[in-house]
Image 1 (spheres, one colour):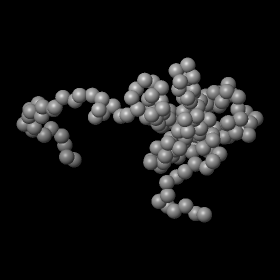
Image 2 (cartoon, one colour; image 1 turned 180 degrees about the vertical axis):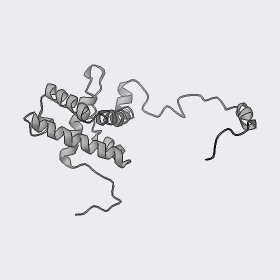
Image 3 (cartoon, one colour; image 1 turned 90 degrees about the vertical axis):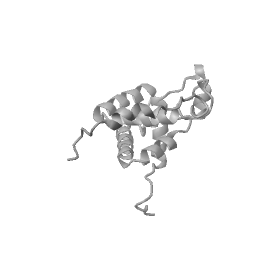
Image 4 (cartoon, helix red, strand yellow; image 1 turned 30 degrees about the horizontal axis):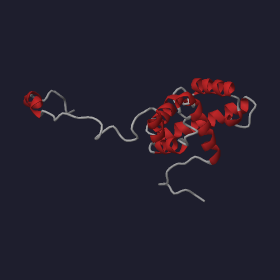
Length: 159
């Protein structure tokens, strides 16, 4: 079935499994403090959805996953998921050399999803809610402080 041009891009099941395994490599479990890995939390959907909001991010994600699949084959495995932990890290090093922008993009997407997850906030001892408006007092703004700026003549060029 053909996708409509307006449909959000999505990962196939094999890409989803690879992404979940990759997320556990980027943010592994820390059982000593009760934190599961990012993949074990099921954040692959959240990461893919965040990437799908911007086509250029989604293409970076898809390219990285395709490169990891190729690297896994080169290391003698059917998929990245089947690689031993040390070989996975070696494959990630190779990915970083081949596509230097891929891992930073994946890290930002992963960390954003991970540290928004209520289970992670609770494990870290934070209340499972946003920090504002319930968390911090914000003093009222004094807009009179901007009067000097408002009086100043424009100093920018329009062309």
